[in-house]
Length: 372
Ligand SMILES: Cc1ncc(COP(=O)(O)O)c(C=O)c1O
Image 1 (cartoon, rainbow, N blue to C red):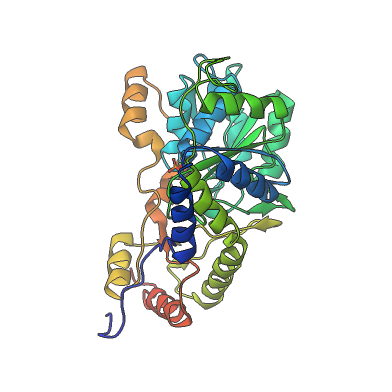
Image 2: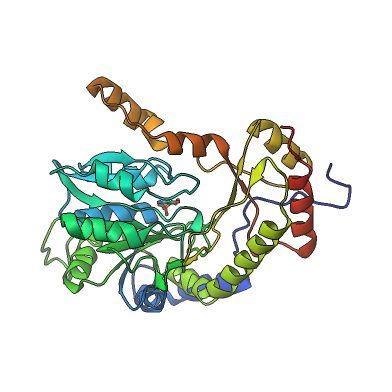
């Protein structure tokens, strides 16, 4: 039970503090609000998180994915291998370009694409593999990138949940042909709404800049067909404030996770795995619960501990994917995906948790015991 003095602990707490407000007001007062110097400075600053790669700011993580796939020349007739255990945006970005989504399973016990399943899903039509660094944990890039290289297909990283995560010292967003990030308010850093594409390829970076702005570098000298997916300078100014803080926030998230790892002992609860060499940035602290998950979540809520399931329905079971597959008589064998979707619960891990919050969360989880 939540005591009278104790407020419920929210599952996420986006930061819009005085620094962010001041930055936004400064840009608003300047009168220069569309894509301009703040966006350029944000791109330059973010580049440090991805080993100096080119950075192209856009209006959302979904736009970042969609533009990257378009810029790689992927479209109708092509296939992209995507995990079904992700947010729908991962697959939506592929389908919006006209390419086909091929779902592959995740690793047993983990939450990232299974390299063996990826290899088995490759066909002559495969144009790209999209590993998702889900919850802030890097996917198995050390094994996926060599598969892509062997088959000469692109790797498109969905790092929307994984700012500053790394594997064996390489940051996510610096492995593939391109990487993508989201700056949605609940992410580890935000710009109200926003996204970033990262790439080492200067030519691809130029194409991305054209695509986000009607195909123009010079005004009214359109070179290709493009969209309007520009980031505003207001968003970029907020993003820059958050970028200066994200490293500290990440360390706090990691410290919170370490506290949970050490303190959670309930037999029905499995704490999140971390692969060797991985820097997990804990966008989510996601446990697996054996037994009655709904009952466990209700008990956590009753104890004032926010909790949520990301994601209860695998993408292949969502209507826009399920119905066409049913019609075509196509089925996916994704046992680890189905299992994860049935077992996961994310607990609060955001950097504003107090020591008292951490203790309350561990106590509530451990009181679930083993009889669920
Ligand atoms: C894994 C994943 N991919 C893509 C996206 C899309 O990002 P956005 O909401 O900024 O479009 C998100 C975030 O919402 C996400 O979590």
